[in-house]
Length: 252
Image (cartoon, rainbow, N blue to C red; front, side, top):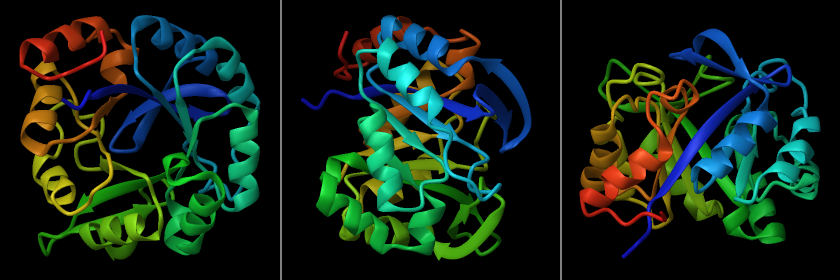
């Protein structure tokens, strides 16, 4: 049986972990290496770090925290935000990250996915998708931290991203982000039924059952969350025991 992953997400701005709602009202939380070490010891399966303003500020990702985090944890971690070139992949992986996440740059330069996949392997290339439902009832891909509508159909982009070489998708619902009312199961089901790579649910977790539903109903490979973990509303050990009780295979 496939083991499902619990993945805390750490949004980094100016070297600090922050959190907001629907990508707005950002508040300070903690140092990334402090939280990274805490989650590593608490039983997280992986970590994801996003430099959330790098793309919008047209700058490269801040790399200083990556080495610090790598020295403090013993689980895989992914880094994204402001990744625009194969050189960015190289630098981030050399600093100690296991995976690199692309979002805005992949939309702008889709061949970056292929180049990175060929050079480092698909397992290192994560396509992150910030998705919002529009008036037509379709889901569209947004970039620049959820600020810009690309016009891309999210389901078509998921399929294309995998075809180009992405080894994993992180699907983040902007509508659900930070609201703690559950993942967008309809969106997740639509994507997991169309691609053959791991899909990570992001945006909306608020209670234990939200995580279980994403796995059972949408068949996601991992569940990503931020504020419920940062503010200790849900402990990772507690979550894993709950999922296990629902018949979901997790690493205890």
